[in-house]
Image 1 (cartoon, rainbow, N blue to C red):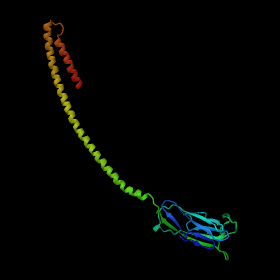
Image 2 (image 1 turned 180 degrees about the horizontal axis):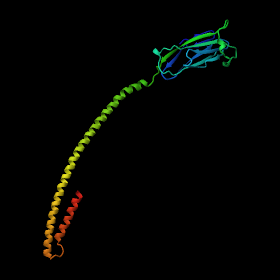
Image 3 (image 1 turned 180 degrees about the vertical axis):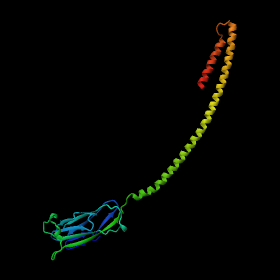
Image 4 (image 1 turned 60 degrees about the vertical axis):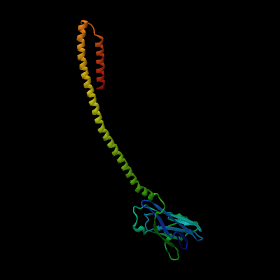
Length: 242
């Protein structure tokens, strides 16, 4: 971008372009080149001093040298209408004594008086939308596809949960029927064992009577002992199963 030229300084660029992004500071710079053979003092002003920070805002440029001035725009909470900015900057320059420094500069040096040359160069502010590649669009694309992926996963999990629930329900249904069958079988076996036990007790009583008659009341026969042992086995089996 072309710059401006006065009696003392050549200023580049001719406008201040700030990369604009909400809630973020932005900076740009301008170069002040002394095209004379003597010292030149300068001062930078703006129509909106609270919005900008200028470093340095005053100074002295030596003959044939260049001074870089950095302008920082404070973070803004919202974008202006149509990205247009009405702020402006003014660079004033005037001849200074040789050996002058920034400490020697005062406001009176830039007062316009007869026979005194004070150059003034105006720069407007331009906002430039950030065009540098950044991952935001990619993240946005990923964000748009991510819900779909998440949704698919959700459907998959839901289906899986449903199938597990059904399987659990079927298993629950099967378990009561199996348990009922086992209980019924055990009940039948218990009843059968009780009947056999009663039958064995009757036979035992009968054998005891016969044995007492045969042996005259003394001792037990081998058959009786065998029956008693068998009875113990059956009772133990019943207790173990129940």
